[in-house]
Image (cartoon, rainbow, N blue to C red; front, top):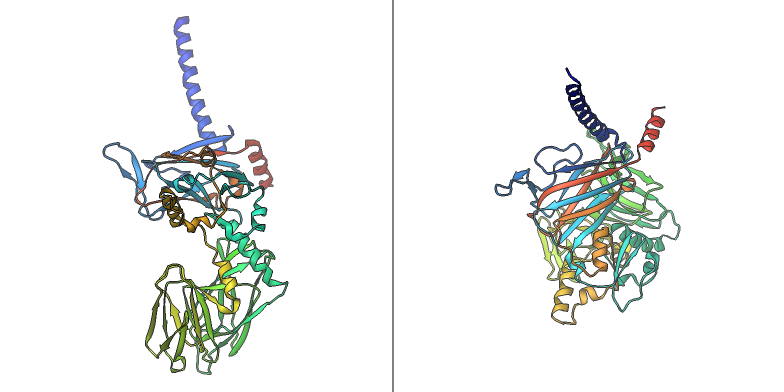
Length: 495
């Protein structure tokens, strides 16, 4: 073998070793990210270990026969992916690509406090307002030209909150609600006693204020006799983070009491589920917190009253006992309730509040509307209006722009607001500042991984659009982390 041949062989060896080395480094970086970042794309043609297929009301991966591209099609307006998050990831850049530009794209996720956060990446209706914009403390604020330029989010709270519109911003809404509720507490342990004879299973939505305390002291009665071998006791479950905490009292006494108490909770709403049989009925609730009863109510004590505010357009009421027969007042009108018959009431107004007053709390009430809440009237109508604080709706934005286009001064639904608060991606905030309407099929967002609720190295990322039928053709994720910080944390945990 002459010198020239040896050089050629050496050259190819170097090439092969380099390719093998680069491939090894690529594999290693996929696991250790020692170059500081890693990029992955799911085009739905095969499984991706970082970005699984979309879940929810969405099709399986489909292939376009013309473009040969694979996609998943939404059957509703949203879907989610259970994203894999490598340990100690500091930042994630996301890109979602659709088959055509969408007028609305919103990213959603749970933060460390397990509260929902949503970030607007594209929204033609908001862009078409052409209001001045101010970015404050991570929030985007649109304000009317006649209004004072905002400087701090706290300053907006101090002003008339009826002039403050909120869009997809639960954390701001919860702050407003709890600040109003806290004015009622006055540092009392139990600030109200409710005669609320709930029978069988119910779900409560309980509001926790700045003090972080959830505390309900419940007195109940259960039917027991010497020949009864059935299961007795009071069962309740409180949804905390991604788990349920159980409270149980297995007392065999006819009357008993249980206290459901938690401290140091983040401000917000919590679901409390009651799980017991029809032989158990509440007598009294001493409560530190305001709460609503979800979906329906079933009451059994004709010696007590049953008065509620209900966020529904229709309501149905029945009783199975002669003791429950009575006249029931619904929005000021009287209706006769007879045993084994049904009162069906429907309002002609949308977004109605039904005020229900009954002298005998011996009936069941429910609605065909979704998301119905029964609010005990003992809490007052003012507090009901407080917790019913509503986001700005798409209908309000459409109504406003339709009337502006027609030079009609009757766009009252949105003109009541001086300020609109929401979270926006950098690209969308920049477009708003430049009075531009985005028409991109590719939409990007950056996420602080330290603000994500991550379990078992996974986090749900939600994607919402204006209409069903959207075709998603790609999702790209770039993860960033410090290799040395990861290494330090790894060995610290190993000790």
